[in-house]
Image (cartoon, rainbow, N blue to C red; front, top):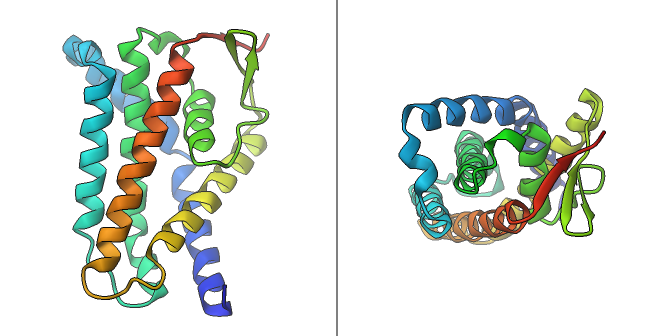
Length: 201
């Protein structure tokens, strides 16, 4: 990775981490209100939830007007945040479909998303037999995990689009990445919510 791309990557990661810090709690509040207003939301099938959010994110990504060159990625940070908001919302909705809203915390949401992106879930979600233990975190630890997630997402987004800056092709590459990773997060959420979830004492 050359110096220009590395600088762009660092900028995206820093800006993304800043915007993600409060996003998990915001999504929790928004989805809690939505489910209280419409109980039918929790009756959706997991497959339909994952399909709906995956298609929604692919559509957002596919419509991006990427500026040629890696610097164009800086302009789409708000769209990446929107995609991630949808992914976190999807995780919440899957949890609600398993009737496990009571155990959904920001740590659980982050643990699922970060685990599906390949950045690891150590110190957040721990497998204990057939159960999932949610570990409590300090603000600093949570920030560290958000930074790790933003770094992983940035690398994946750059990798999926770099060298594909012909008109329209870059957006198609980002759309394919967005669709794929959203489905992976949905799959991870399903695996977690199928198990008993407990809190660290």
